[in-house]
Length: 301
Image 1 (spheres, rainbow, N blue to C red):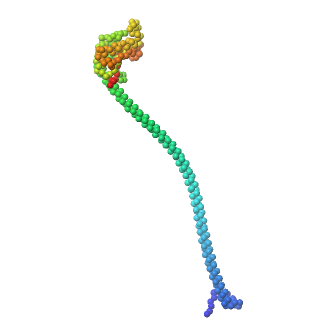
Image 2 (cartoon, rainbow, N blue to C red):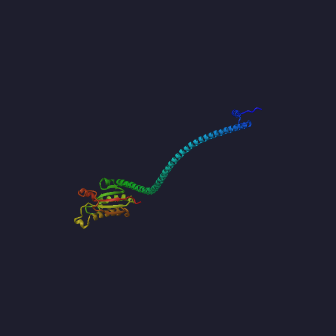
Image 3 (cartoon, rainbow, N blue to C red):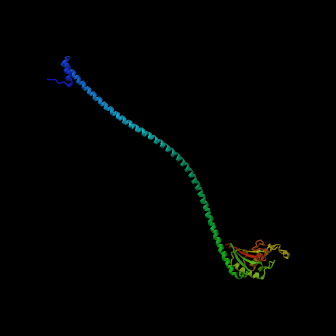
């Protein structure tokens, strides 16, 4: 059987045969060793190539990991910066919260003060409302007074129209008072407190009107001019005060004793020369100041 040798081994075999250095068995052994070495070499080369590929893969992975690390480092830096920003924002928020808390405290204190002021204002408003109610009642009463006194004035003017027309009596209203004013010369002689006949007839008619208003206070007021009491009159009257008081008292007594006016609701007052209604420097002024006023007040009930 013919033996086959590898192409490389054939050249070596020829060389060894020619040189005559080795036998066939030795040659075959050498060829076999050479073949084994070649296979080991090829296997080693394959392992080297595999190692190179592995190294390349590892290098690529390392580069990829390095890039990932750089990205992570950048992300970490950004995260740190973001964290610092968050810390700064948190600090600002804390400061704002603290400031807001102080402001809230001030607002609460202000609200408490306003609430107290509101309560006080409500109390004052209630008090004012009560005052207004009371004032309205007073106004209503005064309006009632005024209506009654206006009606009284109209009634007296109508009842005494002849006397008013002849200037023997003057009817006028001042506030809640209605007043009949008579000149002293109609009732008395100069310096006297004795009623004249025409004065008595006038007072009788006035008394009839006074009896129609039984719930009213009446005051008779005597007035004089400012001429001092002198001469023979000084023996009777110390001053105009006494004269005015005597005349007022005489009229009041006549209204009661002759005119049947209730004495419990009539009074007399001597006011002398101290409440003039005209200038005492003229005769006409003095005449007007010498007068008897019969004042009717608002009904007591």
